[in-house]
Amino acid sequence: MEKETAVIIFNIIQREFSADLEVPLEITANELVLALNTAYDLGIDTTDIKNCYLKSENPIALLRGNKTLKEFGIRNGSIVNFTE
Image (cartoon, rainbow, N blue to C red; front, side, top):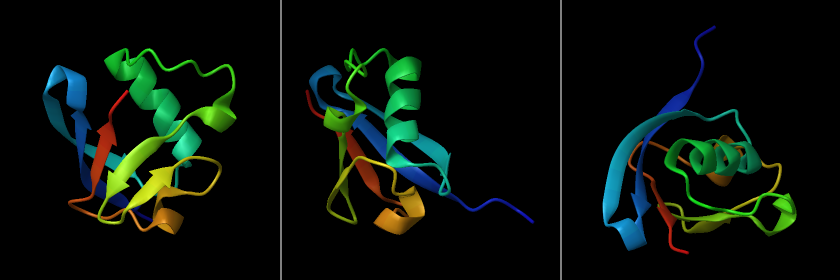
């Protein structure tokens, strides 16, 4: 069985940086936050994961917690912003 993925646009607003990323839809929002924090050195304090989130467009949501990206409705072309 092939894993479901989506190509999202990831923006780091303060750095004026944007990247297209292919992400699996079966990972949780927390896993996405941790992975992007590590990959892009975002400086998110992950000691209290309950307060860690990313903002998305298409669908409009705060990505946090143990819901999967699929449950949030993330799809090809969704935009995920890091604004802090």
